[in-house]
Image (cartoon, rainbow, N blue to C red):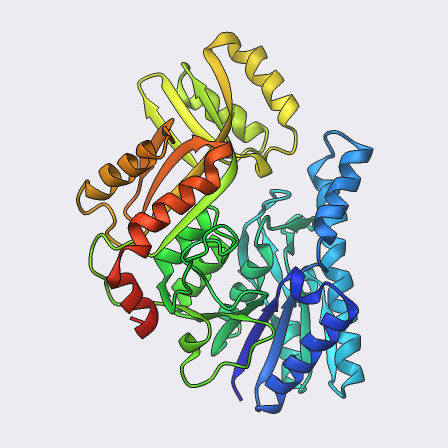
Length: 409
């Protein structure tokens, strides 16, 4: 009997009725003869509401206490879904992250999974039960409750699928797969039938609300297929790419093709004329993770997501105290990226992307590249315009991308 891991996001469990709908879908999966482990996020905007409440109590809440608070959201979802499954005749049991064997680093708010010890999950699946697991959370080796940061429930699901040798991991949300851009921003955004692990990781790192980058790491290591699908849609059929997106190990695509455009709206750029080791040591002291780092002599530049700045005011004070005028915090920026395998095989994409942005009156403040991505730092108030301009140039005008999306290549 194959093990299937399903994950349901916050919008899919946002109300009691939606929880009942999810329970019905889980029961249909169980009726197909599968062992089913279900990972759930907090209901709706619960995590945001808890975080806002914490900020009302403390301008700089301790990260440990934030984890204790935020982990409550998923526990509510898991218990309610287990009850809903019971009402439909399912034999279900709920587990927290620690009870499920999710072992993480000691870092609070954005811990990483070190290993999964799913002995209790395996035992209950073996008894024929549906196991409902709280996503987004785990426990450190020092027995501290930790949370996994944005998209952490995806990481929980795929890590659990890898540990259980699952047939596949289904990531269910209110969107029927991964799109070439945010459909709320780009009217011509297209659902992508198949993506490689590497492309999906880069889209996640670039700010696309698709799958968590660490989740894809687990899938890639174990060769687990990820099916990104709509909760309201059917169960996966013989070809899951026809009504969702399949993330898997893909054969190499033609170099230079862009599969998606992603953006992250709230970026802070740190510029410092100090030795990189001193700046990075200070950021580590503050638990601040960077996204892009450039070092040239004693000139250091690092881009940071504001979501990682839970004590931004104190960080600015520390920078000023330690480095005075030699360190500047540049605000008002966003990052917009184009993603695709072999995108930088030549410099053509960097040049044309910069040109179309400039022609639209969007002047990049900085540019960075990797094997799969080109990122431009731009004024925050032009984020959506930049996404539309780049999508129109790289994707809507590309017949090759249309064929890839339609044929699942």
